[in-house]
Amino acid sequence: MYLFVHCRKVAAAVLYVMNVVVFNTFVEPKWLFAVPLYHFLSNTVKPFTRPSEHGSTAHQKHDWWGIADLHRLVSAFKYKQRTNM
Image (tube, rainbow, N blue to C red):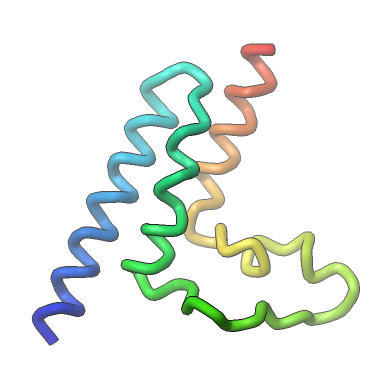
């Protein structure tokens, strides 16, 4: 139980750092290296499991990519990339 709570706190800290990097810096894609760590700590995605396919357009949904809870962050990053080109 304690380990689960501790992992949630670390996941929240990783998410905070990713938000700070995306919203307060120039276009720097290094924050993407923290996404697998966030997925593992927040128990969003389990390792070695196949993604479920719900039709031919499943890859267009945020759940399939594992960014449903990171959608705002990804959208801001995409916007910053477009404006800095």
